[in-house]
Structure formats: C-alpha cells, structure tokens
Length: 276
Image (tube, rainbow, N blue to C red; front, top):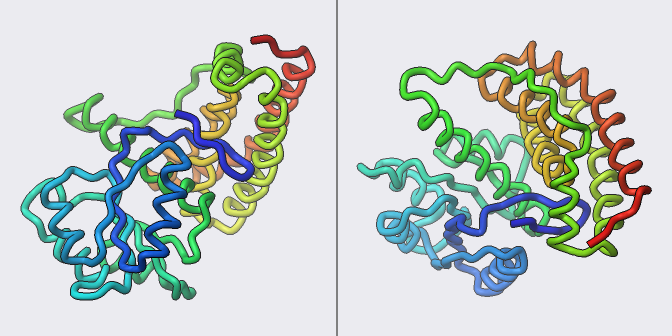
C-alpha cells in the first residue's frame, strides 16, 4: 500500500502486525488514530506485563513500547521478551519516551530495544520508523531465503531507468491524474532535503543516519518511479548494513548527480501530462 503523510510517501505493508504498549489512554487514542489513518492496525495493551503476554501469543512484527508504565515498565518488559525461548524474542521493539536526551538511543539499544521515538510522536516520525524496520525485517528474510549458506551481497550493476513508466501509470490509477502532480512536487522537495542529509551524514561518517536516510529515500524514490535513484540508495543501505562504510561513502558521493538526473527526468515526465 502507499501511505501519504506530510511531505513524503512511504510504502508499508498493511499486513504489518503492530502492538502498542502504552498506559496513557489519551496517547493510546492519538497513536491508534495515526496508525489507522495510515491504513494499518494495532493491538493495544496498557502495561509491560500485558505486552509480554501478548508477544508470547501473537507473532508481532513491531512493538511500540512506552518506557514508563505501571506493574512492569518498558525496559523490564523488553528484558523479559529477549529472554523468551521462542522466535518472539527477536521482535522489533521501539521505545516511546517523553524524556529523550542525548545518549538515550544508545541506552535503549543497550537495554535490548531496537530504536526509539521521542514523544510527542508525529505521524511522520512514526511512519518513518515503521517503514525502516519493515525493510530491515524484509532484508533479513530475503537473506535467509535466497542463500542458506552465506548471502554474499554484491552491489547491483543493473541499469535502472531514471523514471519507471509503469510506476507512474500505477500511481495515477491509485490516486488520480489531478492528484499526482502535487504528490510528485512534494516528493521532489523531500528528496532534495534528504540528499542534503545524506551528504552531511557521509561527510561526518554518521553511518546510522546515512543508512536510515538512504532507506527512506529508496522507498519514496521507488514509489514515484525513480528506479535508478532507488537502486543507488538501496546499495548504500546494503553497504552500511554490511559495515562496508568506505564503499557506502563512495556511492553516496554519486547521489548528487544521480538525484539531479532522476528528479529532472521526473519533472520532464510530469510536463508531458498524465492520463487516467
């Protein structure tokens, strides 16, 4: 499915199983509304003990875990989940906290969590996070299926088109010829900002941000038919995941030219007009 919010469109599977562990009823309503408005659904529990019980019974893809909850808090619930003698112990757990400080990310990861979102949560930050961890899951699954020995990642050399016409046609069918121009304009604006963030991350060797921004741009570029740009971003992310950072930086240096060509080609395609 295609989920639209703020400036960008991100692809998230409607089959993603999400558990929200949050004791505040108001926050429950707000987060559930954000999730449901995006075409997704979630189960809700009110404390860490209920979260542990739910995870043990249902194969969730992601748990949104409030850090401060009664009975059993989010950190202790995470500890207990990680000790489970079942595949449930590997569920992605995202910390939700209103007390995000410098160093908190490392703290929560050291406690067994995978990531965190600061409160108040915005729909953009929430969907960015869901899309990121969905792709992490999909990548691990693909590695397992494609090679039961060792999955030898190679940077793909296949030449992808600057604009995939079938994607544009499908986008028009999914929305409308009238809506697509404004959607593409929003995408182009967001892509330009992400290119700057990618360049900055590469310059200061911030590999986490480089990987995250490459993944997010890959998702939106693919949604708008910028296949060559999406492929380049996918390669950068793979290299970061493999900790081949020198190669990732090398390919990141190619982004400016690739993005300029891709976005220009998309603008030129838009000027040709769209039909339903």
